[in-house]
Picture (cartoon, rainbow, N blue to C red):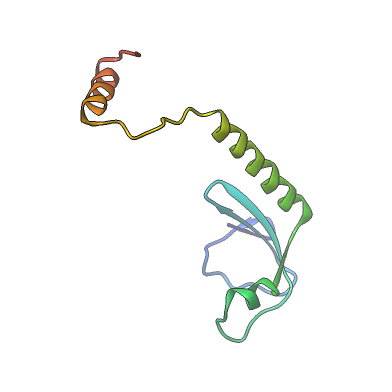
Length: 99
């Protein structure tokens, strides 16, 4: 997590106008703080207190498309392997065989 370009701990206080970069599960969000809440509230209220940059949104969309393309090209078995097939897969990985 970064606040105004400097690395920080998650418990750091933020101010209106601060720019935050959050990395979550390999995805980066660039956020500007628009307001602060007096107390913890719902996610719908929280969304009104920050704004994500256009570049950040575009990067996430591109990453999402890449993941979709990779998933479409990945082979998917029609059904779950039975016990014998699982044993064969395990043995081929252990002994380095590629059937």
